[in-house]
Length: 439
Image 1: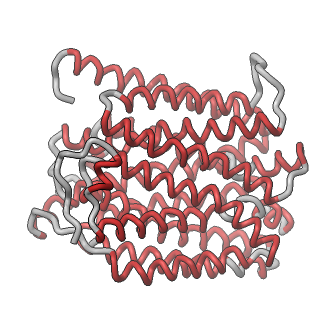
Image 2: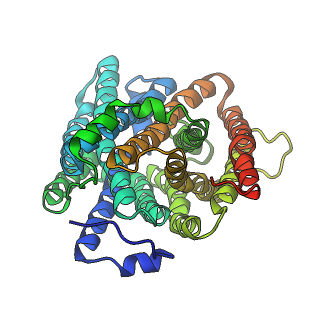
Protein backbone atom coordinates (compact mmCIF):
# COMPACT_ATOMS: atom_id res chain seq x y z
CA UNK A 1 0.00 0.00 0.00
CA UNK A 2 1.37 3.41 -0.98
CA UNK A 3 1.13 6.13 1.65
CA UNK A 4 1.18 9.89 1.41
CA UNK A 5 4.61 11.46 1.57
CA UNK A 6 5.91 14.17 3.89
CA UNK A 7 5.99 17.91 3.22
CA UNK A 8 9.66 18.01 2.19
CA UNK A 9 9.33 17.90 -1.58
CA UNK A 10 10.62 20.86 -3.49
CA UNK A 11 10.20 19.61 -7.04
CA UNK A 12 9.86 16.77 -9.45
CA UNK A 13 13.31 15.28 -8.88
CA UNK A 14 12.84 15.14 -5.11
CA UNK A 15 9.44 13.54 -5.64
CA UNK A 16 10.75 10.78 -7.87
CA UNK A 17 13.74 10.15 -5.59
CA UNK A 18 11.33 9.18 -2.81
CA UNK A 19 9.45 6.71 -5.00
CA UNK A 20 9.57 3.08 -3.91
CA UNK A 21 8.98 0.10 -6.20
CA UNK A 22 5.22 0.14 -5.65
CA UNK A 23 5.15 3.87 -6.37
CA UNK A 24 6.92 3.37 -9.68
CA UNK A 25 4.56 0.55 -10.66
CA UNK A 26 1.50 2.66 -9.89
CA UNK A 27 2.99 5.71 -11.60
CA UNK A 28 3.86 3.63 -14.67
CA UNK A 29 0.41 2.04 -14.82
CA UNK A 30 -1.38 5.38 -14.52
CA UNK A 31 0.96 6.89 -17.11
CA UNK A 32 0.32 4.11 -19.63
CA UNK A 33 -3.41 4.37 -19.02
CA UNK A 34 -3.24 8.14 -19.49
CA UNK A 35 -1.80 7.44 -22.93
CA UNK A 36 -4.11 4.58 -23.93
CA UNK A 37 -7.48 6.08 -23.01
CA UNK A 38 -7.08 9.42 -24.85
CA UNK A 39 -5.64 7.52 -27.83
CA UNK A 40 -8.83 5.47 -27.93
CA UNK A 41 -11.22 8.35 -28.22
CA UNK A 42 -9.03 10.65 -30.35
CA UNK A 43 -8.07 8.05 -32.95
CA UNK A 44 -11.13 8.75 -35.10
CA UNK A 45 -10.53 12.50 -35.55
CA UNK A 46 -8.86 12.28 -38.99
CA UNK A 47 -11.28 9.89 -40.71
CA UNK A 48 -14.64 9.91 -38.94
CA UNK A 49 -15.83 13.13 -40.62
CA UNK A 50 -15.32 11.59 -44.06
CA UNK A 51 -17.01 8.27 -43.16
CA UNK A 52 -19.94 9.97 -41.43
CA UNK A 53 -20.62 12.51 -44.17
CA UNK A 54 -20.53 9.72 -46.77
CA UNK A 55 -23.30 8.05 -44.78
CA UNK A 56 -25.34 11.25 -44.99
CA UNK A 57 -24.60 12.94 -41.66
CA UNK A 58 -24.41 16.73 -41.61
CA UNK A 59 -21.54 18.69 -40.09
CA UNK A 60 -23.71 19.51 -37.08
CA UNK A 61 -24.52 15.81 -36.53
CA UNK A 62 -20.83 14.94 -36.76
CA UNK A 63 -20.16 17.63 -34.15
CA UNK A 64 -22.72 16.01 -31.85
CA UNK A 65 -20.97 12.62 -32.17
CA UNK A 66 -17.67 14.22 -31.16
CA UNK A 67 -19.22 16.30 -28.39
CA UNK A 68 -21.44 13.65 -26.84
CA UNK A 69 -18.34 11.82 -25.62
CA UNK A 70 -17.75 14.66 -23.22
CA UNK A 71 -21.37 14.68 -22.10
CA UNK A 72 -21.00 11.03 -21.10
CA UNK A 73 -17.75 11.89 -19.33
CA UNK A 74 -19.46 14.72 -17.46
CA UNK A 75 -22.17 12.40 -16.12
CA UNK A 76 -19.63 9.67 -15.36
CA UNK A 77 -17.28 12.03 -13.50
CA UNK A 78 -20.08 13.26 -11.25
CA UNK A 79 -21.26 9.70 -10.60
CA UNK A 80 -17.85 8.21 -9.89
CA UNK A 81 -16.66 11.28 -7.97
CA UNK A 82 -19.52 10.69 -5.55
CA UNK A 83 -18.99 6.95 -5.09
CA UNK A 84 -15.20 6.45 -5.04
CA UNK A 85 -15.20 6.73 -1.26
CA UNK A 86 -17.83 3.98 -1.05
CA UNK A 87 -16.68 1.42 -3.63
CA UNK A 88 -12.96 2.25 -3.65
CA UNK A 89 -10.57 3.34 -6.39
CA UNK A 90 -9.60 -0.21 -7.39
CA UNK A 91 -13.09 -1.44 -8.29
CA UNK A 92 -14.02 1.74 -10.14
CA UNK A 93 -10.71 1.94 -12.01
CA UNK A 94 -10.89 -1.67 -13.24
CA UNK A 95 -14.58 -1.34 -14.11
CA UNK A 96 -13.77 1.73 -16.20
CA UNK A 97 -11.06 -0.02 -18.21
CA UNK A 98 -13.17 -3.09 -19.04
CA UNK A 99 -16.29 -1.05 -19.76
CA UNK A 100 -14.44 1.29 -22.13
CA UNK A 101 -12.83 -1.68 -23.87
CA UNK A 102 -16.23 -3.29 -24.48
CA UNK A 103 -17.75 -0.08 -25.85
CA UNK A 104 -14.75 0.47 -28.14
CA UNK A 105 -14.92 -3.02 -29.70
CA UNK A 106 -18.62 -2.45 -30.40
CA UNK A 107 -17.81 0.90 -32.06
CA UNK A 108 -15.48 -0.93 -34.43
CA UNK A 109 -18.43 -2.47 -36.25
CA UNK A 110 -20.69 0.57 -36.60
CA UNK A 111 -19.45 1.01 -40.18
CA UNK A 112 -21.52 -2.05 -41.12
CA UNK A 113 -24.68 0.00 -40.47
CA UNK A 114 -26.10 1.44 -43.69
CA UNK A 115 -28.96 3.51 -42.31
CA UNK A 116 -27.96 7.10 -41.63
CA UNK A 117 -30.13 7.47 -38.53
CA UNK A 118 -29.25 4.07 -37.08
CA UNK A 119 -25.57 4.85 -37.63
CA UNK A 120 -25.98 8.19 -35.86
CA UNK A 121 -27.83 6.64 -32.90
CA UNK A 122 -25.33 3.77 -32.60
CA UNK A 123 -22.24 5.97 -32.67
CA UNK A 124 -23.80 8.42 -30.21
CA UNK A 125 -24.72 5.64 -27.78
CA UNK A 126 -21.33 3.95 -27.92
CA UNK A 127 -19.46 7.24 -27.53
CA UNK A 128 -21.46 7.93 -24.37
CA UNK A 129 -20.61 4.45 -23.04
CA UNK A 130 -16.93 4.91 -23.91
CA UNK A 131 -16.97 8.20 -22.08
CA UNK A 132 -18.73 6.81 -19.03
CA UNK A 133 -16.07 4.12 -18.65
CA UNK A 134 -13.12 6.44 -19.22
CA UNK A 135 -14.39 8.93 -16.64
CA UNK A 136 -14.02 6.22 -13.99
CA UNK A 137 -10.32 5.91 -14.72
CA UNK A 138 -9.78 9.66 -14.93
CA UNK A 139 -11.52 10.49 -11.67
CA UNK A 140 -9.58 7.74 -9.89
CA UNK A 141 -6.29 9.10 -11.26
CA UNK A 142 -6.94 12.59 -9.86
CA UNK A 143 -8.02 11.15 -6.51
CA UNK A 144 -4.96 8.90 -6.23
CA UNK A 145 -2.58 11.75 -7.10
CA UNK A 146 -4.18 14.15 -4.62
CA UNK A 147 -4.35 11.69 -1.70
CA UNK A 148 -1.03 9.88 -2.12
CA UNK A 149 1.11 12.86 -3.13
CA UNK A 150 -0.65 15.95 -1.65
CA UNK A 151 2.37 18.26 -1.77
CA UNK A 152 3.27 17.71 -5.40
CA UNK A 153 -0.17 17.64 -6.99
CA UNK A 154 0.64 19.95 -9.89
CA UNK A 155 3.93 18.17 -10.58
CA UNK A 156 2.16 14.83 -10.87
CA UNK A 157 -0.79 16.34 -12.72
CA UNK A 158 1.67 17.85 -15.16
CA UNK A 159 3.31 14.46 -15.67
CA UNK A 160 -0.03 12.69 -16.16
CA UNK A 161 -1.23 15.41 -18.51
CA UNK A 162 1.97 15.00 -20.51
CA UNK A 163 1.19 11.32 -20.98
CA UNK A 164 -2.44 12.13 -21.70
CA UNK A 165 -1.37 14.57 -24.38
CA UNK A 166 0.93 11.97 -25.87
CA UNK A 167 -2.22 9.87 -26.19
CA UNK A 168 -4.09 12.73 -27.83
CA UNK A 169 -1.11 13.35 -30.12
CA UNK A 170 -0.57 9.76 -31.24
CA UNK A 171 -4.29 8.95 -31.30
CA UNK A 172 -5.04 10.64 -34.63
CA UNK A 173 -1.77 9.33 -36.06
CA UNK A 174 -2.43 5.75 -34.92
CA UNK A 175 -6.04 6.02 -36.03
CA UNK A 176 -5.19 7.24 -39.51
CA UNK A 177 -2.41 4.63 -39.83
CA UNK A 178 -4.61 1.66 -38.92
CA UNK A 179 -7.51 3.13 -40.92
CA UNK A 180 -5.28 3.29 -43.98
CA UNK A 181 -3.92 -0.18 -43.24
CA UNK A 182 -7.09 -2.09 -42.43
CA UNK A 183 -10.12 0.15 -42.68
CA UNK A 184 -12.60 1.62 -40.21
CA UNK A 185 -12.70 -1.24 -37.68
CA UNK A 186 -8.99 -1.89 -37.16
CA UNK A 187 -8.08 1.17 -35.02
CA UNK A 188 -10.89 0.43 -32.55
CA UNK A 189 -10.10 -3.31 -32.36
CA UNK A 190 -6.43 -2.68 -31.58
CA UNK A 191 -7.15 -0.06 -28.93
CA UNK A 192 -9.96 -2.09 -27.33
CA UNK A 193 -7.56 -5.01 -26.85
CA UNK A 194 -4.97 -2.63 -25.35
CA UNK A 195 -7.45 -1.32 -22.77
CA UNK A 196 -8.51 -4.87 -21.88
CA UNK A 197 -4.90 -5.87 -21.17
CA UNK A 198 -4.35 -2.76 -19.02
CA UNK A 199 -7.50 -3.64 -17.08
CA UNK A 200 -6.17 -7.11 -16.36
CA UNK A 201 -2.84 -5.73 -15.13
CA UNK A 202 -4.64 -3.18 -12.94
CA UNK A 203 -6.24 -5.97 -10.91
CA UNK A 204 -2.84 -6.74 -9.36
CA UNK A 205 -1.40 -3.24 -8.86
CA UNK A 206 -4.19 -0.77 -8.04
CA UNK A 207 -4.90 -0.57 -4.29
CA UNK A 208 -7.78 1.08 -2.47
CA UNK A 209 -7.11 4.17 -0.37
CA UNK A 210 -7.70 4.03 3.36
CA UNK A 211 -9.26 7.17 4.82
CA UNK A 212 -8.45 8.40 8.31
CA UNK A 213 -12.16 8.76 8.96
CA UNK A 214 -14.45 5.86 9.64
CA UNK A 215 -16.72 4.64 6.88
CA UNK A 216 -19.81 5.93 8.72
CA UNK A 217 -18.30 9.39 8.99
CA UNK A 218 -17.40 9.31 5.30
CA UNK A 219 -21.00 8.45 4.47
CA UNK A 220 -22.19 11.34 6.64
CA UNK A 221 -19.92 13.72 4.70
CA UNK A 222 -21.41 12.33 1.49
CA UNK A 223 -24.92 13.17 2.61
CA UNK A 224 -24.23 16.64 4.03
CA UNK A 225 -23.64 19.04 1.18
CA UNK A 226 -21.75 17.12 -1.49
CA UNK A 227 -21.61 18.73 -4.92
CA UNK A 228 -24.26 21.27 -3.94
CA UNK A 229 -22.06 22.63 -1.16
CA UNK A 230 -18.99 22.54 -3.41
CA UNK A 231 -20.73 24.53 -6.13
CA UNK A 232 -22.01 27.18 -3.70
CA UNK A 233 -18.57 28.84 -3.71
CA UNK A 234 -17.94 31.67 -6.20
CA UNK A 235 -14.23 30.88 -6.40
CA UNK A 236 -14.84 27.21 -7.10
CA UNK A 237 -17.35 28.07 -9.84
CA UNK A 238 -14.86 30.47 -11.44
CA UNK A 239 -12.13 27.80 -11.42
CA UNK A 240 -14.48 25.19 -12.87
CA UNK A 241 -15.35 27.73 -15.55
CA UNK A 242 -11.66 27.88 -16.51
CA UNK A 243 -11.59 24.10 -16.88
CA UNK A 244 -14.74 24.22 -19.04
CA UNK A 245 -13.17 26.86 -21.30
CA UNK A 246 -10.16 24.60 -21.86
CA UNK A 247 -12.41 21.66 -22.72
CA UNK A 248 -14.47 23.85 -25.04
CA UNK A 249 -11.49 25.17 -27.00
CA UNK A 250 -9.70 21.82 -27.24
CA UNK A 251 -12.67 20.07 -28.82
CA UNK A 252 -14.05 22.98 -30.86
CA UNK A 253 -11.70 22.15 -33.74
CA UNK A 254 -12.60 18.44 -34.01
CA UNK A 255 -15.55 18.56 -36.43
CA UNK A 256 -14.47 21.47 -38.65
CA UNK A 257 -10.67 21.74 -38.86
CA UNK A 258 -10.20 18.46 -40.82
CA UNK A 259 -12.65 19.64 -43.49
CA UNK A 260 -10.89 23.01 -43.77
CA UNK A 261 -7.46 21.39 -44.07
CA UNK A 262 -8.71 19.06 -46.78
CA UNK A 263 -10.42 21.90 -48.66
CA UNK A 264 -7.59 24.44 -48.43
CA UNK A 265 -4.51 22.21 -48.56
CA UNK A 266 -5.80 18.80 -49.78
CA UNK A 267 -4.07 17.05 -46.88
CA UNK A 268 -4.16 13.29 -46.30
CA UNK A 269 -5.74 11.82 -43.16
CA UNK A 270 -2.29 11.05 -41.74
CA UNK A 271 -1.12 14.66 -42.19
CA UNK A 272 -4.32 15.94 -40.59
CA UNK A 273 -3.64 13.60 -37.68
CA UNK A 274 -0.14 15.02 -37.32
CA UNK A 275 -1.48 18.60 -37.23
CA UNK A 276 -3.97 17.65 -34.53
CA UNK A 277 -1.10 16.01 -32.70
CA UNK A 278 0.76 19.33 -32.54
CA UNK A 279 -1.80 20.64 -30.05
CA UNK A 280 -1.13 17.75 -27.71
CA UNK A 281 2.62 17.95 -28.36
CA UNK A 282 2.70 21.56 -27.17
CA UNK A 283 0.65 20.60 -24.11
CA UNK A 284 2.85 17.60 -23.33
CA UNK A 285 6.12 19.53 -23.55
CA UNK A 286 5.16 22.32 -21.16
CA UNK A 287 2.85 20.46 -18.71
CA UNK A 288 5.60 19.13 -16.38
CA UNK A 289 7.37 22.51 -16.49
CA UNK A 290 4.20 24.34 -15.48
CA UNK A 291 3.51 21.75 -12.80
CA UNK A 292 6.93 22.23 -11.23
CA UNK A 293 6.63 26.03 -11.08
CA UNK A 294 3.08 25.89 -9.69
CA UNK A 295 4.23 23.66 -6.82
CA UNK A 296 7.31 25.76 -6.07
CA UNK A 297 6.66 29.40 -7.05
CA UNK A 298 4.15 31.75 -5.43
CA UNK A 299 1.58 33.25 -7.82
CA UNK A 300 2.85 31.16 -10.74
CA UNK A 301 -0.69 29.95 -11.34
CA UNK A 302 -2.01 33.53 -11.61
CA UNK A 303 0.55 34.35 -14.30
CA UNK A 304 -0.33 31.17 -16.18
CA UNK A 305 -4.08 31.85 -16.02
CA UNK A 306 -3.72 35.32 -17.53
CA UNK A 307 -0.98 34.55 -20.06
CA UNK A 308 -2.55 31.27 -21.14
CA UNK A 309 -5.97 32.82 -21.60
CA UNK A 310 -4.66 35.67 -23.73
CA UNK A 311 -2.52 33.44 -25.95
CA UNK A 312 -5.40 31.00 -26.42
CA UNK A 313 -7.66 33.87 -27.48
CA UNK A 314 -4.96 35.09 -29.86
CA UNK A 315 -4.59 31.63 -31.41
CA UNK A 316 -8.28 31.48 -32.31
CA UNK A 317 -8.23 35.09 -33.51
CA UNK A 318 -5.41 34.26 -35.93
CA UNK A 319 -7.33 31.26 -37.28
CA UNK A 320 -10.48 33.34 -37.67
CA UNK A 321 -11.43 36.65 -39.30
CA UNK A 322 -8.53 38.94 -38.48
CA UNK A 323 -10.21 42.31 -37.96
CA UNK A 324 -6.73 43.78 -37.86
CA UNK A 325 -4.82 41.43 -40.22
CA UNK A 326 -1.46 40.24 -38.94
CA UNK A 327 -0.50 37.70 -41.60
CA UNK A 328 -2.00 35.37 -44.20
CA UNK A 329 -2.69 31.83 -43.04
CA UNK A 330 -0.79 29.01 -44.70
CA UNK A 331 0.09 25.48 -43.65
CA UNK A 332 3.19 26.64 -41.75
CA UNK A 333 1.26 29.24 -39.79
CA UNK A 334 -1.39 26.65 -38.87
CA UNK A 335 1.43 24.47 -37.57
CA UNK A 336 2.79 27.22 -35.31
CA UNK A 337 -0.64 28.36 -34.10
CA UNK A 338 -1.81 24.85 -33.16
CA UNK A 339 1.41 24.18 -31.25
CA UNK A 340 1.15 27.47 -29.34
CA UNK A 341 -2.50 26.76 -28.63
CA UNK A 342 -1.46 23.48 -26.99
CA UNK A 343 1.03 25.35 -24.78
CA UNK A 344 -1.42 28.10 -23.79
CA UNK A 345 -4.30 25.73 -23.09
CA UNK A 346 -2.00 23.78 -20.78
CA UNK A 347 -1.14 27.00 -18.92
CA UNK A 348 -4.75 27.52 -17.82
CA UNK A 349 -5.54 23.83 -17.27
CA UNK A 350 -2.72 22.45 -15.11
CA UNK A 351 -3.01 24.99 -12.23
CA UNK A 352 -6.75 24.56 -11.73
CA UNK A 353 -6.81 21.25 -9.86
CA UNK A 354 -4.40 22.48 -7.19
CA UNK A 355 -6.25 25.81 -7.02
CA UNK A 356 -9.49 23.92 -6.44
CA UNK A 357 -7.99 21.86 -3.62
CA UNK A 358 -6.45 24.97 -2.04
CA UNK A 359 -9.79 26.79 -2.25
CA UNK A 360 -11.66 23.84 -0.75
CA UNK A 361 -9.13 23.68 2.11
CA UNK A 362 -9.41 27.43 2.73
CA UNK A 363 -13.19 27.10 2.97
CA UNK A 364 -12.95 24.45 5.71
CA UNK A 365 -14.08 21.39 3.81
CA UNK A 366 -13.02 18.15 5.60
CA UNK A 367 -9.70 16.71 4.40
CA UNK A 368 -11.04 13.29 3.36
CA UNK A 369 -11.13 10.99 0.37
CA UNK A 370 -14.77 11.98 -0.04
CA UNK A 371 -13.88 15.66 -0.47
CA UNK A 372 -10.99 14.87 -2.81
CA UNK A 373 -13.15 12.59 -4.96
CA UNK A 374 -15.84 15.30 -5.16
CA UNK A 375 -13.24 17.82 -6.36
CA UNK A 376 -11.85 15.26 -8.83
CA UNK A 377 -15.32 14.57 -10.16
CA UNK A 378 -16.21 18.25 -10.47
CA UNK A 379 -12.89 19.01 -12.19
CA UNK A 380 -13.30 16.21 -14.74
CA UNK A 381 -17.01 16.96 -15.25
CA UNK A 382 -16.31 20.64 -15.95
CA UNK A 383 -13.69 19.87 -18.57
CA UNK A 384 -15.97 17.39 -20.28
CA UNK A 385 -18.95 19.73 -20.16
CA UNK A 386 -16.88 22.25 -22.09
CA UNK A 387 -15.71 19.46 -24.37
CA UNK A 388 -19.33 18.48 -25.01
CA UNK A 389 -20.43 22.00 -25.89
CA UNK A 390 -17.34 22.89 -27.97
CA UNK A 391 -17.84 20.80 -31.13
CA UNK A 392 -21.65 21.09 -31.04
CA UNK A 393 -21.80 24.87 -30.69
CA UNK A 394 -18.92 25.52 -33.07
CA UNK A 395 -20.24 23.18 -35.78
CA UNK A 396 -23.67 24.83 -35.51
CA UNK A 397 -22.14 28.30 -35.79
CA UNK A 398 -19.95 27.13 -38.69
CA UNK A 399 -23.04 25.92 -40.56
CA UNK A 400 -24.40 29.47 -40.52
CA UNK A 401 -21.46 31.90 -40.50
CA UNK A 402 -18.53 29.76 -41.62
CA UNK A 403 -15.34 28.46 -40.04
CA UNK A 404 -13.48 31.77 -39.83
CA UNK A 405 -16.15 33.67 -37.93
CA UNK A 406 -16.57 30.69 -35.62
CA UNK A 407 -12.93 30.93 -34.61
CA UNK A 408 -13.33 34.66 -34.01
CA UNK A 409 -16.32 34.02 -31.74
CA UNK A 410 -14.26 31.54 -29.69
CA UNK A 411 -11.45 34.11 -29.39
CA UNK A 412 -13.89 36.68 -28.00
CA UNK A 413 -15.29 34.10 -25.54
CA UNK A 414 -11.86 33.17 -24.17
CA UNK A 415 -10.66 36.78 -23.92
CA UNK A 416 -13.85 37.83 -22.12
CA UNK A 417 -13.67 35.02 -19.58
CA UNK A 418 -9.96 35.74 -18.94
CA UNK A 419 -10.86 39.33 -18.04
CA UNK A 420 -13.76 38.22 -15.81
CA UNK A 421 -11.60 35.63 -14.05
CA UNK A 422 -8.83 38.16 -13.48
CA UNK A 423 -11.22 40.69 -11.96
CA UNK A 424 -13.21 38.27 -9.78
CA UNK A 425 -10.59 35.69 -8.75
CA UNK A 426 -6.98 36.76 -9.27
CA UNK A 427 -7.15 40.41 -8.15
CA UNK A 428 -9.10 39.64 -4.93
CA UNK A 429 -6.49 36.97 -4.06
CA UNK A 430 -3.69 39.46 -4.62
CA UNK A 431 -5.39 42.07 -2.44
CA UNK A 432 -5.97 39.48 0.30
CA UNK A 433 -2.28 38.59 0.33
CA UNK A 434 -1.25 42.24 0.44
CA UNK A 435 -3.61 42.71 3.37
CA UNK A 436 -2.07 39.77 5.18
CA UNK A 437 -5.06 37.47 4.94
CA UNK A 438 -4.72 33.76 4.37
CA UNK A 439 -6.06 32.61 0.99
